[in-house]
Amino acid sequence: MQGINLEQSVVAITGAGRGIGLAIAKRLAAAGARISIGDIDVALAQQAAAAVDGFAGSLDVRSPASMAAWLQATEAALGPVDVIINNAGIMPAGAFLDESDALSDTQIDINLRGVIHGCKLALPGMVARGRGHVVNVASMAGRLAVPGLAVYCATKFAVVGLTETLREEYRDSGVAFTTVLPAKVTTELASGTDTAARGVPTVTPEEVAEAVYDALMEQLPEVTLPRYLSVLNPLQSAAPHWLLRGVRTVFGDRRVLEKMDALARASYDQRIGALTKKS
Ligand SMILES: NC(=O)c1ccc[n+]([C@@H]2O[C@H](COP(=O)([O-])OP(=O)(O)OC[C@H]3O[C@@H](n4cnc5c(N)ncnc54)[C@H](O)[C@@H]3O)[C@@H](O)[C@H]2O)c1
Image (cartoon, rainbow, N blue to C red; front, side, top):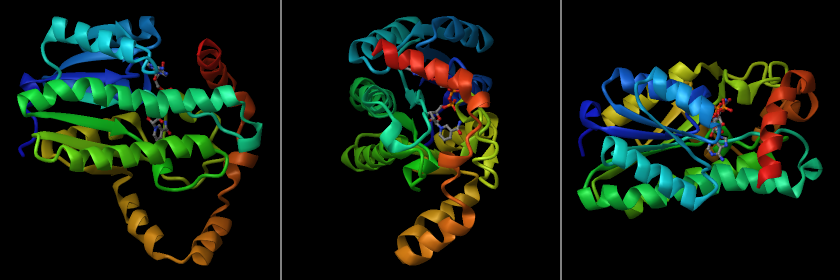
């Protein structure tokens, strides 16, 4: 399979009103793609679309009906969707037993079900045309356990499994699948993590966007950010449990539980708390 020709492509990006999704929108627009922005914050989606001369639609990835309506509106405005980037996600932090059922459900609904809805609704057109690319934004927390992010990790591990399975199930369809696995990215989602994530490799949203561009150009199955972290995956599978536990203890892997800056995180927590109440 050849990489996508972005100058003739329509790219639909979920959760692109800010953060990583917005940076991807800007990078792919600069490469000539026509961009559709979907976000639950419609005002932000419209601002983002204006910045990339694209289309904006209201989208709640939790709802298949909302996903279908946004994709249909995108196709009516720009043409068939060649690339979908399932990026919308939330990351509450704290002890598993302190997390409300509603907040656990909201993470599963947005981070996992939202990606499933995007894949189910964008894939049929791609398969029918015999070409397309699905990019699912997971996280290094989809490969490495992080105490304090149990349900978040569960959703991201699931997105990794979903994407790997779809890649095999649809391998003769002409559609490519990429999993994106960033460590810490400097967006609102990571606010208040400065102490908790000290020593954790950190990248900018623009670096993630560049990696997504490369993945589309080179049909990469997986991109890890920073790239050198890709060695962790085989190392983790090969190393004995006692050794991994020792490394974790030296590294201080309980910092998300113990060292989050609640004040610096308050406005992000309020934003995702509002999403939880609506569900
Ligand atoms: N920032 C990081 O450190 C980091 C690291 C690894 C992976 N990720 C993943 O990258 C993705 C983007 O995260 P970000 O850092 O840009 O976060 P962000 O909070 O800056 O942006 C996320 C966007 O998604 C939107 N959104 C939330 N719920 C939605 C819904 N139900 N429907 C539609 N839109 C919705 C928000 O309004 C927001 O504009 C997420 O999946 C996240 O898990 C982030």
